[in-house]
Image (cartoon, rainbow, N blue to C red; front, side, top):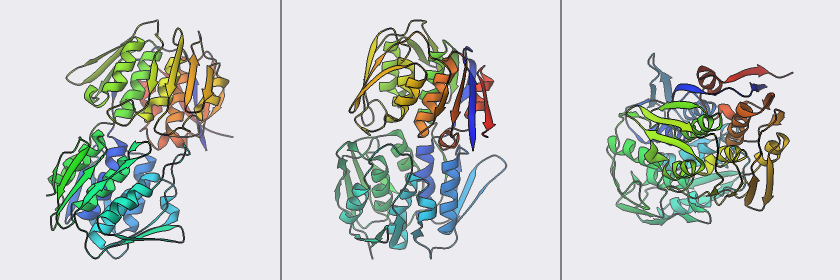
Length: 422
């Protein structure tokens, strides 16, 4: 097992290339099950979750390889297997994205209940209900979801859940509907840029889709889809994380490939804190005032403040001059980082889905334990500014969503290295 060792206090300055979006790449990779011929994806990040998806697709008969330029090639060679087994699916929640493509293309999908980060209840009901609305039969078999359909038929599908729209459920129904007979209208659809990117990929393959990026997506089913070449969008969550890295160290960073229009609510909050953010031709530039203002943040479905940047924002607000409040409305239990930040001197009070943050003058380096992907990023950010040395254990969490984070931070002045534990 590995950990990160960070000596805090360095000001970050320079340029960072933002990797492709994991949350766009994974469903697009799963969508390769739908198409005839070869799919070529560029800007796919080299992450643990991507490797898990490749392993799962290989089991499902999809041949994959990366060429010398880093492009990922995918081609279906065997359509016999439609069983995504527990061994692979339990390691990554995004594995559930094969559910819709398998059902639409192979008429059967048997997928183990998914795993992933321990950040609270994330029910799978919307996926199943959406696909049942398209005509699938469902049963639970030995911990697996088994869906069958001789032919999917277009329908009106409502995907609103208790915490808003579901991104992965939207992706699953969207993919399945491309090969369904007739028209499908997805209401309360997720509006995230990653859903738009998935739709753009499917359209390039021959799908007929309109309304992506709005709460109502319309799909006219087609008989077949053909492989294409596609560039995955830049990762807005990685960009947001590095924006906070620049702000918290009073740095000056250029985040190449990042787009403000994918992060408007987040950018609004950071500007109110005192962070200077500008969109340039190559990406986003970030600098900050020495005095950070407190703010109130509520996570919401896109285009609201992203839950995937809540933990990182909390780290920044630990150093604000006053009291801030964060309310988590997507995953109310997503506060495992609170205890670890408190070990570093943060003044935090959790009350249900709300955390009150009393700003402090400094954080102190400590031994901390990463509990999930975004909490890991929050603790690394804390280490960048903390006095002394911070060791963030369980580095494997960060490797699920950040490509070579220690190399990118080191290149702009951070004192961070990856070590083997023990």
